[in-house]
Length: 569
Ligand code: ARG
Image 1 (cartoon, rainbow, N blue to C red):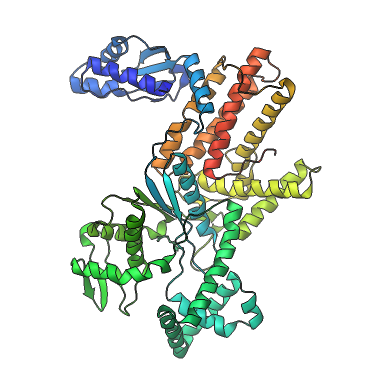
Image 2 (image 1 turned 135 degrees about the vertical axis):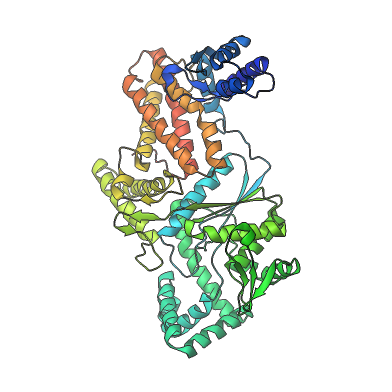
């Protein structure tokens, strides 16, 4: 058992000895380490319930059992806080065990459980815009974190590849593109002709009618229309794939909306049979008054299905195919009502008796001058943003490494640019609105991706220097914690497994980002106060072992966020 586990065990047994059945003994890291490393605040509540004096109770608890070896001391402060100070040797042993463990101490709490994560999910024939970046980046970080916790994750890109827009698009494709353009099709061209064709539907009823006919033909499986539609998907996936490669994001499945089409009529039939769907003005609806939600349409007046019916069928299919413990959806907060509605409908249908449905939503990212993307336009495309980030990082790299080859500089600039964009997104609680500024995202100081990448690279070169100077492995010698800075840093390392667990349970990568930033700050104060390579050999060898553990955790944590970790910066 790790030292946190041992301390908790001792304390809860002590509480049990004093007030049987009270359940006391929770510990949290102390806010102020002058008073101890961990603290327990349970005595106050328990004393109140037992009609005892809280301070006296706390004193009784810490004296109930002999102090275990891992603790240096246990003290009572204020009205009844219990402060625990860990022994340096126990902390050192904990750090060494963590650094040697293949999972860096992360308990495989998800082993044997499946989780489906539905993220990114852009729409075919439309460029991915900045609104999709958060879904891709946050979704991918949750994906990586859950895998690290041992879950079997199924990352599913639920493409928007079906719907009335395809009739409009087919017409635009046939009438507004030259043959050459059709041969060299891009998403940008598709978007252009879509807008043109859409505008035509507003002005020309005959055009609108033709769009409808093309859609009906597509839905009926007309070979020609199906072939064009497949081409739209193929072109879109090629472009999306380019972005996913740059972001190092990979999916296990690409089951778009079209995959579920054959299941929609039966799903609505079931809703009717169960008396859950009723007809209203020609449409089929589910009344959700009891849930305090607006009416949800599941089949439109024209007989067509919609986003809601598709998502209900998706839950049915995913639970039947994978029996996941959780299905997580990552989208912007404008879709909250949609998710509440179809989650409630799935519950009524009994589709998720064994599956938790969870909507992780985020606010849109803004530029100081306004929103990045609106339904009205003013759209900054994702690829443009990534290019801009790499170009800005390139300036920094050119200055610091004029001697490097062009390829090496380009690769580093790309890693810094992507890291900056991802971290700017992940370092905030997803539900908060963020104002994005280039200065903050690319800053080499402060809470930014490049700052953490830089800390990681500096650690790499320190470890390399040690290897070169001594010919030894940085983890070959015992770790002996001397100074307070060393102990604080080591204690923070011990919090890594719990931090990853919490970030995964709450689907908040920002918890891990905060942790890593604190780690780099603690490392930096350690490094400023404690020379490593210049210290006496014994101290040097011990300190380098600590640095090695910091390096492993920092690199491991950044990788869980999907942030590249270049060797040198
Ligand atoms: N394609 C949708 C959009 O771009 C997101 C789909 C999210 N996933 C889902 N199962 N509804 O807004």
